[in-house]
Image 1 (cartoon, rainbow, N blue to C red):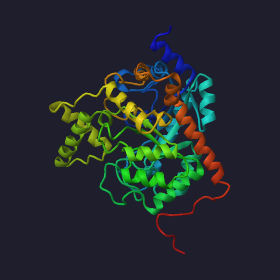
Image 2 (cartoon, helix red, strand yellow):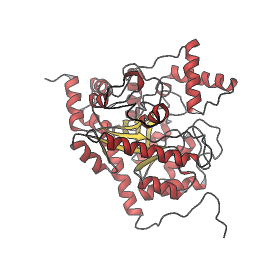
Image 3 (cartoon, helix red, strand yellow):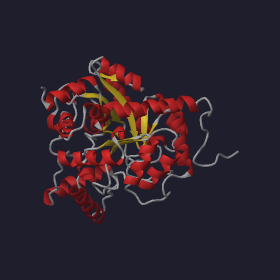
Image 4 (tube, one colour):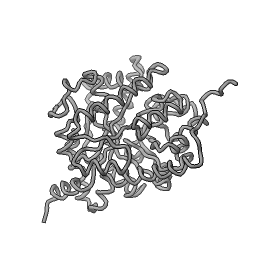
Length: 394
């Protein structure tokens, strides 16, 4: 009889583990200006990164959504250029490491790349700042391979409220609804991580296709504003979408979330904007020297999976680690080699191989196919939207 470790290894050999969010492209930009001679992910990078090819292989990763994140507080228009640079970096990375990576734009392509023994590589844009309120820019991101867009990052944008900013639109504006509709029409998944609860509700009401949370967890377990409340999860089930559970300590551990809330107040008092991901992260690292941060654990993450199974159902759960997007991860989930530990814990709780295969990648593949089908149908009846955020003068 096989051990749990052998059981999980076999499961991930035959069913692709698809992670919804990894920030390696931003690390490559910030640390080495995209120079993969200096950050050679073919070698094990240790403390320099949470992600490299040897550890992806040990972790059983079959597909990865690479985040093409750019900060949400960039000057107007700069975010589009920075996003294009991020997209270019992913394309260059996939080409450079083509023995291990293969670009994928559809569910079928994910399965073909996985079957070839490589890691399917997809792109997700993290924040509506990446389109500068232009539906034409949105469509061009799709052409370049982007298959989801998170509606906001840490700041509100001109058409949607963020989870970590003061509400302005009370959810989505009329133009924000049009963004969701156009995403449905072109086949780009609507990602509700980072958005306010009211934006979640408005987007779910507007979307004709399943939506995703690329890296969020359960508000009922950890009351971070980045997590999804139970009423939203009930609607997500009806929408046939998915929540890709994250490993971020501040979103999975209540003690860590409380420490972050205290740090937010300290940052404001020090004149640091807690919505600025880069400066706030640096502030937190420094503050932790005098006020140690609590440590999250694998058990904290498992608690979210248990609750989400009850709240939204086994068909609507996935994995969204957020590696290289945070400075530390829970004990037991320190880097991308550790996914099997999570699946082993779920297996020990009695989750079947069918359950685990759905969580690993089956559910997000189903969502992708449904989004593709909705787009194919809507493109027969609706032309590209010409809506603008401001009325066009005639």
